[in-house]
Amino acid sequence: MALEESKREDDTLVEAGDLRFIIDKDAMRYLSGATVDYRESFLGGGFTIKGPGTSHC
Image (cartoon, rainbow, N blue to C red):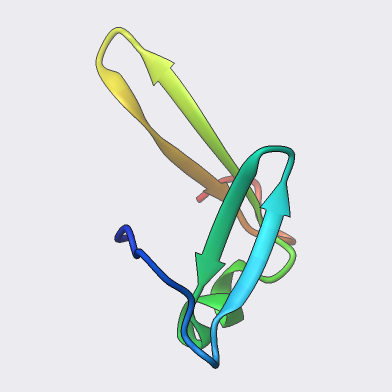
């Protein structure tokens, strides 16, 4: 994952509340239908991704 400043022509823009995600076409193949969440614990924070048809990723 990386932070981008602007959307390219072949990127997909996903908005959830006040958040905006720009996803490139290669990543979209893997993220389509997935649930992305940000979690914090005593070990730190990070994104968790649960793909469709999987118990966890």
